[in-house]
Image: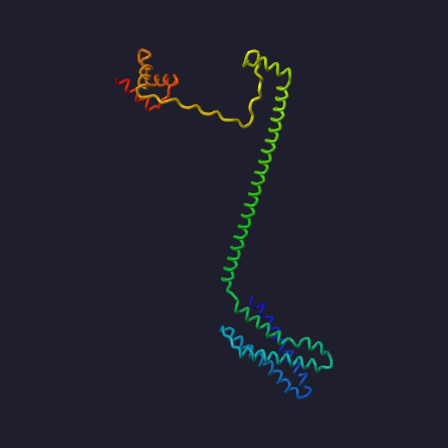
Length: 286
């Protein structure tokens, strides 16, 4: 992974240094002896390379110096300025020389990217842990999405079933109401018929002399409730003892309590089980 950033930076630096040296020798060689131009070109490239090496040393130690960085960028700007000046003064291929004038600045930018990569680089163990965490998060998200989709499908199925069941019930009720309405209409038509009325009147008990009761349809709908019958007065202990004794001694041998209680209630008398048993004990004890 480190080679992906360091190799382009090294290649760009080498091309930039060779190009700067060649341009300085060709450009200044016309005005000064070529050894002097060579020394100037090597000075620019050497200073650029020395500052770069020192920056790499500081980066390896986890340190950073702004002054050194500024000097390094100054050498890069100087090399780029030499290339731009040569391109502007060249009589031939000026555009081609101007197109490669950005190489020193590009080399510095690549080394800056490489330094940023080193600051954020992680060990394989850390990368594996991060990948594991990300995979676990993706798995949990996928499971949650699947659970939500399943719940949504289940709810949709339940609502569909309930809706269909309600529709079936409504259809059955409508069909039943229609059938009952037709039956009721038929019954009303039959009752209103002249021949049917005479036939039904002949089998109906008479209410008053020489008047036949009219056959009526059964009541269908709300009706007034019949008021409940008021309970009769409760028996006193003496009256209860007398009734129990009469029923008990109505046969020979005397009746048991169960038989007496059955006949007592069959005769229409009412008393609680506690009072009835207490009366039975008093009568037997007497």
